[in-house]
Length: 143
Image: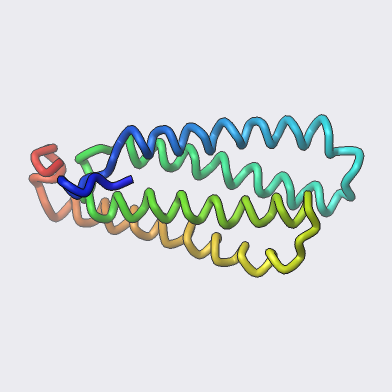
């Protein structure tokens, strides 16, 4: 989702991806509330809800990063978006498969997704920090 010619974030691609993450989080939440609640133990239902929650949080986080536009460093912004996207797919996706398909070996992927999410937030911190030291970024001349 990076334009090879300009090395800039493909805004529309990331916007669509974030919107799809949000859409599927709502669908997954509704599916859990209406179809799974009586069929899963409380523990497994909580795991499922964690996947739904983190998916929505990071869909919204991606929208927030996109809304920042040129006010933060574009390199770290791109990295944040990519890590939020990858992390959400790995974290929430592995939890969905763990709960719905019983694929226990996928449990080792969940922490990798969590690390990507943490790294995405770290990249956002660096994007903001660099913007504070680079006035042309804050003025919007850099993007």
